[in-house]
Image 1 (cartoon, chains in turn purple, yellow):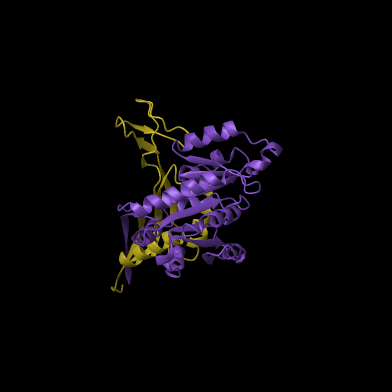
Image 2 (cartoon, rainbow over the protein chains, first blue to last red; image 1 turned 90 degrees about the vertical axis):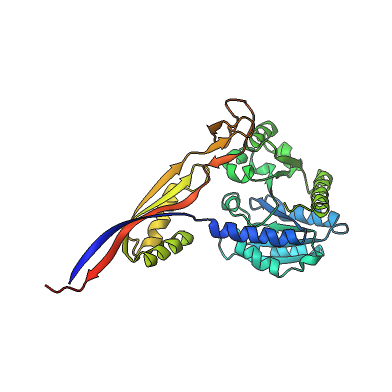
Length: 230
Length: 116
């Protein structure tokens, strides 16, 4: 038997992130149809995402209906904390995957009563790297950076800061104990994204939370009274 | 990586490939993929499959922005996005964030039932 080999060159041109992007778009459309403002909350482990979220919920829940999707590798610790604040929360465990993906969010959203949600916060896995690359269907990304992490982090992790509409600089009460340079931080962050909004906060001494709350209220209100999907 | 191999498998079936000799990826400068990790993981996934001996080629695409004020196209990086012509800041990436499987090369096995 004679075997002939034919060499083939095949043009493919397929986006490897296409599936996630497609699902993210579907998530976005679903949430838009229910007029829900959605935040993808990002930051390193220990930056203060969950504590910040607790503070936000406490101050906003009487005015705005909030739901939370918690993403962690393992445990339901964060969901339990959020549950104590009295809002609906779904815990996603990725079992080792370092970021949330759009298909996981689709499953979580299906479990929520979307008719009772104005603001959805997805607290992503603590990670400044891959979380930047996976769209989930959110309206905006908010990245939390604590002063103890160092003012060089925006330059070291440019993609996540470039893709965030808001950066929350947390643990301001500890600034005097670190060599964090506000000048360097502000210069670098604006070079990455000129229109990024910076909120300086401290959850421990309750500093700066008010301005953040006002911003969130404004985003939710604008979504509610606007007929244009974002 | 699993997405990549999913697509490759589809093409292996549709084009009746007996083996894949080349996998060409197009990756933008701003895509945040680390080359040596990608290569290493690729080899792990390829082991024991028709892609095992394939050469992995990574083609990098420059990050280019198009100024929304004057239309100038210019190279950018994370910290320098200012248009050289009108000196205004732009974040309008037209290339540089791709992650594509661009091309596959392989052998289509064509058995002829002739006995000699």
